[in-house]
Length: 206
Image (cartoon, rainbow, N blue to C red; front, side, top):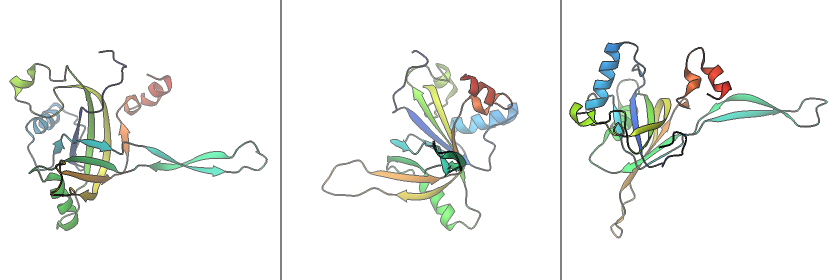
């Protein structure tokens, strides 16, 4: 597979964790605990699954025009702040109620609303980061038997809107539910995030 070829859009997986958790472990022990939770899907703080559709992977910039006196060519374009549409997840209805449980906790829970940080992992077919060891280790996390291509990260998400399926006894469509997540920033993981040298690498196009 040539490294720079575009890939299909259908192989992706969504992972969400409580925002208070450390998503980037520093020590070997922390990495072991994080990977163990991912591998066996334990704990009530982890939501993951294969959704049928993900939209809203957008990062926008609010721009203000400034008309400078004496500059008649064009107004200046000044940066104000980032703006991020909701991330929308859609999936077929199953007995799994995790996204509804999260919404219930936020709306009706006696404790502070739980916010989620999330990853959307896009994969290509073949290879995988576990390779042939996948079956022997017992890892069953979706997406780890594929080749990772792109990873998006959003932070401090809240379940702004949950929409159940449209039910119609005259049809045979798959029942689909959707979740809209309002969040405080979305990035695609890349060289710009390397502390100290990220901006230099980005400017060089590396």
